[in-house]
Image 1: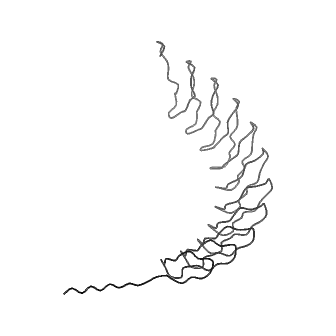
Image 2: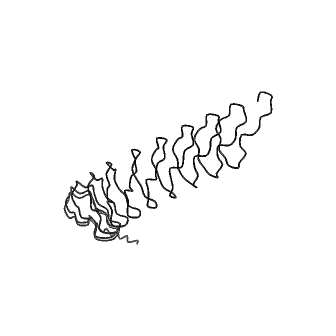
Image 3: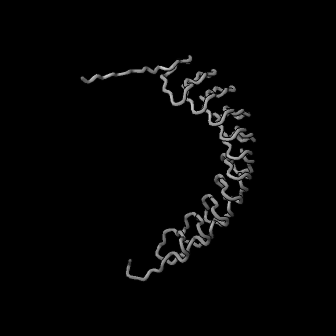
Length: 210
């Protein structure tokens, strides 16, 4: 300190302020748990009006929140008002060029690939299914069974590699491959693509003590 009394920079509880040049500065946050951008030293209103909303950086002017729905994710804003990109709860959208963009996901907890700017239907119709990347066209899910594991997809429909629960299979060249394990908790070696029987050997040791 230079010898003069300096007042605290924060009046509100749990508020975040930027660095001060030595003058009194009011807190940048009026709402609880709000996030604001850096301030050039002037009074700045909070960028967030809704609870737990995410906003982009501000050029120093008042900016309305980018998010109207709870727990929605929006892309960066060029400084103008932007409508939310997400209409469904917990949906994931890609980056927006500044125009209104419809959500990519209609089903709950669905995963979609990158978006080329056009509307894309969800890639997953079944719950907890895993799909590969899409070239922008409609793609059916690769998995019909629950918790099945499939290999990479060359662009055609592929049936799941596992018919039994908790089975382990090797990599597939794109064709249907039967599971390597029929018994629970069995150990097999690597397969060249054909069916392989179990490699277990039973060894008995008898010790006779005289």
